[in-house]
Image (cartoon, rainbow, N blue to C red; front, top):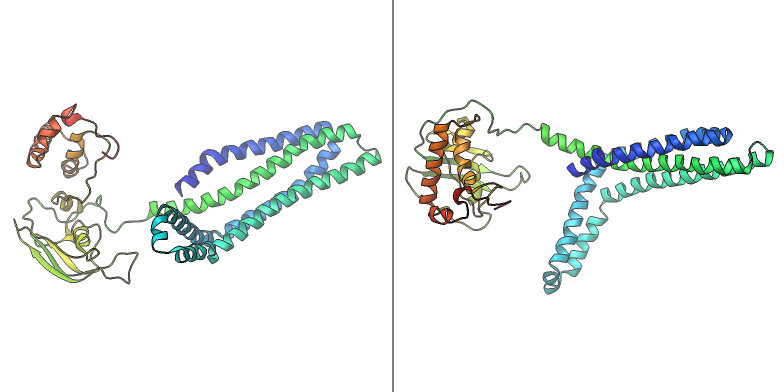
Length: 365
């Protein structure tokens, strides 16, 4: 969606200005060579413009259907790309008919078809009217030549330059479809930007945690993901993790192990029940402070563009607040970083890197 908006703002707007300029130059030269032919053309322009506005309205009225169709088009593209990428698997399991039926269903979904029909009518109307206007100018020009109002040479000169008028209007009208798509994309983007998160790490207030004992308690926790309200991932889960205790959550894939960690980090809030940290309900604790007391090591390490030192220090910097750290804080931060690397048995190989802790890890590590 962002690319659609960017294309209109950065490219389509510029090309539309070029097309409009071409139309204005064409009309001016048309008056210079033959005012009569130029007046005829000018009289036909409103008809053409009104038709194009109607076409744009038709495309705009289908924006809701276009949103639904876009999700189906995404599904269709994903199905096709996955099928091609996994063609051996499809062949090995004899899934040709199954996959083919799924692609056929996605391609012929009602929203996709309606969107295609609306775009086809809008584009077809533009081409038809362009040709109709050209034919009308030719006919009227022939009549004027026959009546001696204009001579053939002036008509041809005026006609050729007026062609630029038609091309400019037609091209500018063709950009209307992109503008409608960009408007739809912009609405979705601003919907995301304006959305107020129920869990905002920047929100002030909440219980402050000076020191953390690290006692975690799940009390009758139930949870489903927002996009899957009918599927309960956790149901009446209760357990307690005491200070200095090591606990392993075991289970099959999809049993909710990672979900428990996500709830503890407050990426989500429980649907039912509650989670307590050192006796405080997670929802009552200042979120930034809560996360500063937790350390998460994922299954796959994540490195950001920057130095080794910067990547190690991110957690401590997050705990330090919004303002820039002082010199003392920076010195303490460096010592904490080295201590953490030593504990992780990473200090020796980091020191052997070309620039030690200041070695650039590159994009995505």
